[in-house]
Length: 221
Length: 260
Image (cartoon, rainbow over all chains, first blue to last red; front, side, top):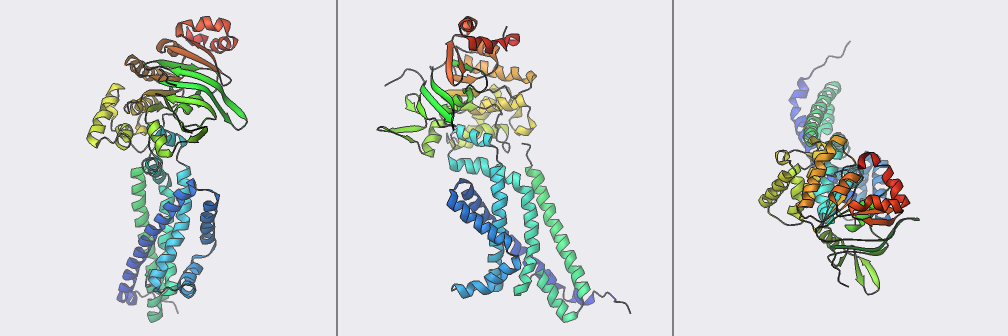
């Protein structure tokens, strides 16, 4: 007796998936924005700081990179509120976690980008009489952005997929929506086929957009 | 002690670790003068030039531009490095053109020239663009104003580099082996621009391997060897000086094919 694929029940609950996808995108965008800010500030600080600050930033990066995201999600959602006096819902908690997670990866991306800005460009900026702040804004950051765009695209896609981990604390994003339909319809294969396609299409769309940006800003050096 | 020279370098000393690159260098440049530094590689020419706008720190002696000490402030007997904003203000008084052009790759030719005018000279955008177009025209690149550096040849990039430096109206222009990275057929167009600037009375201190050009375009030639000034001569006396200076003679012999 074979298994007959039937998508009817999936379409009936498609709003769970569609709403979930929108929330996944929202989680990714907010976390990437906050993470990029964390990453940029720490990277700029890192390249100009002394040994102590560098060690602290490196410790943050290493901690995040060596602990599985799912554990970080549990730690922040269940652990943090018991350690310090804060209360938040699962969505806020997850955004906080993914932002810190994104920040750690983006520090590395931005740091290597900053260090790859050719020395000669900085000399040229100095020779013109630009202040350190002006050299950062007008010379280092534009060149860094162009150098790091391909790595940034990859990180962004990864972070979008990482939003699926939020399902473990019942944030109603796409994967959670899929699980909810599973439990109520038992149409496991169908749900995961549809969900996978939704992740794929969205991921490709993001990547396509980012490649356009890369092409526009590509600069011969 | 007041000095009549625009640039006055005295007893300049500089080491990289244990290696002393500059040993008590004395050199001065007056307003409107073109002084060329020649010498074998490793003689400290480029380091000397980079000390003048404090891209390199120095350990001893002094560099003064218009009487103001470059890079350091004397607090009684103490010598202190100037603050970054102070350094930026001082560097804006000197212009520099680099061997490897060092244009900002994300900015067009005009924007490269405008950046200093806008940020340092605080010119409004429209005026900065006018000045940029004027100088790009002077170096023969009026039609390339909106091209990115990656779209320009080496010679064109270097001419943008020159326009970027002179548009700031520096008191002195520093030229660091500006033709060394160019294909031979592109050297001429860049040297023509320098010759024009010399004709306009621009004060210049340059390091070059183009001996023929140095003789032709400068008021004085400084020969450096082993971190010291070995000879200072007017261009027409270079050969005569070589007769008495072994190092200079052996250095020039390597250029004999091009120098005559």
